[in-house]
Image (cartoon, rainbow, N blue to C red; front, side, top):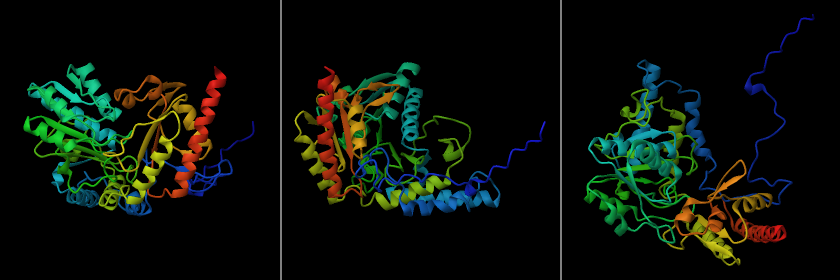
Length: 418
């Protein structure tokens, strides 16, 4: 039998690839132009933020929990990042917990605050039905698995929570209220400061998922939300994925949602990701004051897109003209569904999103629109456009014209199927 040797595999840096990474700003031969209108889902990593992360991908590699000088250097830089984020939001460094992103921040807040309340005999929870699933599913798990009682606040046709409704359902045994600052699907902004003040008057902990707020609306201090816990993440503001933070108002010390180490003052086990934290802090400092999305140009382009889409027959607007994120437009389309609309838009070079989750061919209607009174057909036909800093007037024109054409095609196809 001939002697056979497997050739050595070249190191990653030496490998030759036959493809280049896609550039969303470069025209493709398949589409006339590419317009990215899905910034509420994620944003491209800013070059300056990436530069700030680079030393922590090579030069600074120590474990911040190690006692030797390499670990102590990493610890000193971790503490410096915590100080910088605290200075930006005018809170104490001890009130900042670094996490892996918005989902973990929300889970840590909800599970931790609820269990803290349960230890004091409070087992009633309140949230809204339009929350991100990172919040809503956490509350449902507490109800279904740990015996908490859950109240869902009603919302109006634009998805807003009424402070008066919250006042009516607060009880002596209410442990936690959580209402998001701004909705990720429709862009609706909630009166969180008023809700938080009401909770504080009644001695109830208040959490707000502010992931979509930061970078889009002004915030001088984290205390402006009047919340005991505030969630944020980096990749919505041109930072890296896998990086987030949770503000926990002192002296609260909710139990950790997962265990294994004493990191983050025993509130979040796991070795800190210094590169991601560097990117988070750099993005917050660069893009939240002033907000990177709230420029007058973005709002004007959003308003134009909102007007053009709303003028199409059978298209219903779900984003309020006022008290909404300056970059977001959400619509539903009569006689069509989200999957077909998104596929058509993608072929036309327009990257948008939907409130629906598609898994193995099944479509889950938007729970946000359903809570706002939408019919099942409307909830199953949500399209969200979310603008960013590089979107231009020609992009809006292309997106509006492409959307009108895709709507017409979807309706024609639907009529043919019947």
